[in-house]
Amino acid sequence: MRAEDSSTSVEIASATTLVTYEIADNVARIGLNRPEKRNAINDRLLEDLAAAAARAEREAKAVVLFGHGEHFCAGLDLAEHVGKTPMEGVQGSRRWHGVFGMIERGTIPWISALHGAVVGGGLELAASTHIRVADQSAFFALPEGQRGIFVGGGGSVRVARLMGVALMTDMMLTGRVATPEEAERWNLVQYLTAKGGALEKATELAKAAAGNAPFSNYAVINALPRIQQMASDDGLFVESFIASFSATTPEAQERQRAFLEKRAARLKRAKGD
Image 1: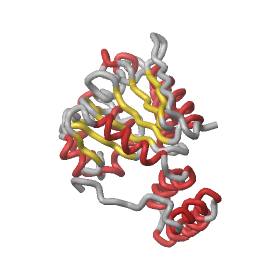
Image 2: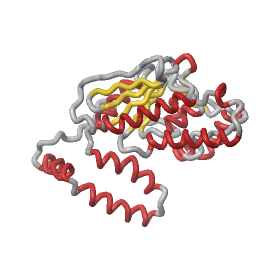
Image 3: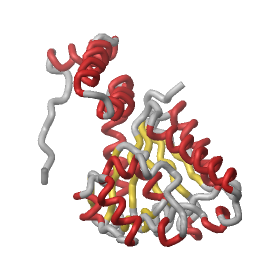
Image 4: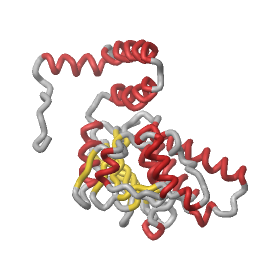
């Protein structure tokens, strides 16, 4: 059962976990905790991330994903990957797909706070989150071509759909490294902050998302991307059903009454917008 009004922070961090977990105000903060390896993803970190994601599904209403140390994530741990058979490689890639799919297709929004290296599998992981915030230290790359490999964590689908095939092809063929400003223009990130500010901004956004109706959040993160892949008429048909169903839930009815009775906060333009 999810916490309804949690102000208590509980953190898990020990010698046996490569992912930290804390929750406050219905927002779970999940941290990649392998800073000596630039948070490169090995099998153990992947399974710890899966466990943290499953826990957040039970307890939280939104998640902030970040990296401890100087980097978000430098991608695949090549030291563990070298020597795997083709079948082991396929199984490993499919496990990445499964864990990242828990994030992308779960029931709660994930906001990633990006700094330092957002490279290879790290960019694939960030692409599975729903909103991405980058500070000025962040840099983005897909160096798989230089390593003799190919993206295996969903990048050919998620990253390509965000930035377009042409730009992704350029990054993979040439080793091009993108700045935060380029990443924003290419739709890889939605918010930029000063150095060190991504985690605070991501937490602010997660708290805002956690205040939404759970069904609305579920529809946004699950229905909206699927509708984009449909023919226009099919998408509009599905939209009508989701809109009708969501508007008639008890929580939606109460929220609509609160707005009509002027009990709900009105939208305001933020400073600097």
